[in-house]
Length: 306
Image 1: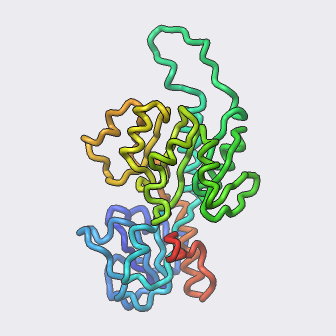
Image 2 (image 1 turned 60 degrees about the horizontal axis):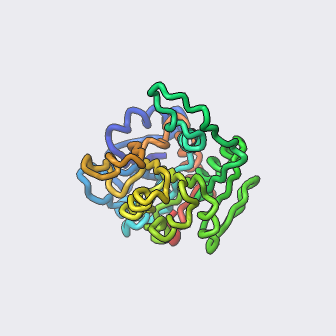
């Protein structure tokens, strides 16, 4: 089995040994005749000259396996006719759970209220988690994991997705009930994918539905947020704070108003990362399935975009 490593060169030293350990029968290469490869492992940033990858020459490839959870950068590539699978990695999910629970707890407990200035503020007592409503937008693998973790801490958790697909132990609203979900979101966490239906979803109208003082945590996709509307909601005091890990332009330009706004915390797209040590077994399983003609895991629905 031969696979082409269509990823930035900086990733090779981590992925090559991980894949050799997880899939000893795999011959992983960074160059060669495209027609001689059974699979393509893809990560954004390839080709490194900034051009779009041409998948057409890989006529023997039975699978294109994304090494990232998001596939929005290639799902619309007209040359990509091979089956495309997104990454669902236990390590990535755990990283996202830790990021979201950490920032949700910080917001819930009001940690930033306790300035280290010698003033004794013991009149500020945070509520218990059971008194706080959290809404998770997007209840796929990552969103469901985050929702279950927060529910395990005692928060009143509601999920929302376009399909309304059930998540065990979590109340999930679907489709047309987005406004109802937003209306109860004292803490709103967005893990929605980047699709035509989600772009600009959080605009002036939808942000106005949040309870006054709500906190937004967005480690999903930057395209979800209308940036000027978010800043206006913060300036008006309707929104209490925004923790943003993803942006329409990355890296976030130094002059962008998010950096200096007191109501915004910027993190540099670090919420969750694919870790070769855990993801290699996922890739190996899908490569073996492709070679055996079996059903692939996490196959992307091109019409939905994820």
